[in-house]
Image (cartoon, rainbow, N blue to C red; front, side, top):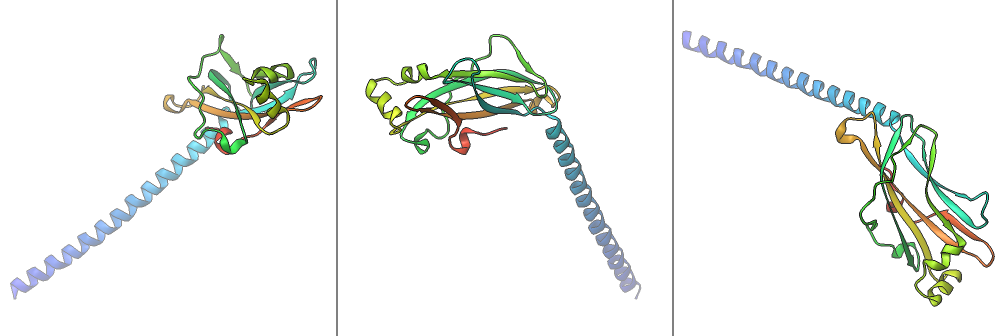
Length: 200
């Protein structure tokens, strides 16, 4: 009889321990979920406060058929541009651009470029006169002028976030423009596949 009572007490104790383990596991899971939510919230705040470089194209106010590709800091904190790269490709259309984009080795600017929130800097200028120079032959230039082929100017900017942890300080903005050679006027417009216009 005493043996049965001992077994019963042991089973009761084991059940209590099992319930406590289940409760502890539930508490640990809830703590992990809470910690993950806090981490995501902190990352959202960091992302909201970080610099974001956005690319636009503006016509030159002084030179007709000339354009400037601008990088503007639309974020809330300063950014330092540490490297840029650019390429020109002439293809039938944007579906014939290489994937992933081929930039070559980015080069550092001659002098550090720091952009405060709202500030812009030119990263590329292009004019109608240069339109012919990007074509290897007169025949290819005629194809570009007749829109049988398209000239794409594309690149990327690597910039540093001054407030993020060291392992998350570098970001990239990729950009791509289509050069349109008209009979009398030219244009430069943002274009290209999504992978050519990414932000990290």
